[in-house]
Image (tube, rainbow, N blue to C red; front, side, top):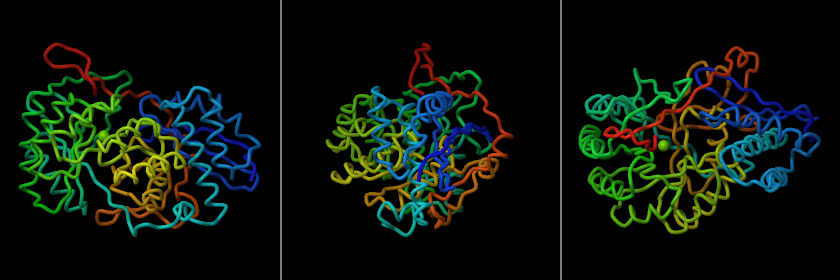
Length: 402
Ligand SMILES: [Mg+2]
């Protein structure tokens, strides 16, 4: 099955998505997601200018060799742009191989390890009362696991908290500026979870994302303060460029820790997993080199009882969600999958066969990963430059992690 053509489709049905479509001499096509939120066109150029010329004429069945060719052949290894581009090729090739076999993708990975995929939804509120209402609303929708984020008194804008239920942080043609106070956040958050746990009872899994804003000792203090409320996980407690920061948090708290949505290779995960400093690894199909590389990360994690918890916000396209659900259906050390529904316009551009039902997602049985693109419709939503915000400390304007 020879690759005859490949093209990059950039569209903005509510937010930007970059999609790679590979065509073959058998008439089959494969799709991969290449979306890197806020830096979309860098990956589009990497694919168009540097990767696609190398793909033409290759055997689409040689997924591993093509992966190694793009990774080692670039000489400059890793990084989010390179690994998102490789991920798009890898996902499209797995899609093609599964279509050629006439099988849903999870069958090629080794078949089903579970009947359905546990997902968590996002409950975001202006204040504690509003967040409690949102958690209860998500439980009514069937969610068994819910991430709770709340506005903080004295802060204008807070990560995860939008307007009218809709949240899309990449909102400006230049980065918008938010202010931040770890002290105000740390005073507020234990009270939030006391109220949420009280309202929702012991059964619902609760999650929280600190979004890389705390120092290790602040994160340790938060983890300790949240212990009575039995979180499923505390996410991105501190930046993980220095993995050892998690050793300090671990020393002080039994609150389970998750990190990795910004990671792009096994090498970002290795120490965290081998030292058992985390409980869940959040790398995704699109940002971590595709299914081939994510599988290697999951296999290493399994040796240390670290489970998967793939990033699944709307900054990944339905193509990535489809591929991730096949991966989740197979991966033996599955933990949970993030699920944030896309806009109606996005779901129309990307016809798909996965579905949400009573707190779980189900991948479809269509050959491949089950997600397509309506290119004529996509063309009606041209690219719009958008940036993620930046954060500054409230008291003196120092640039902080957003
Ligand atoms: Mg996160």
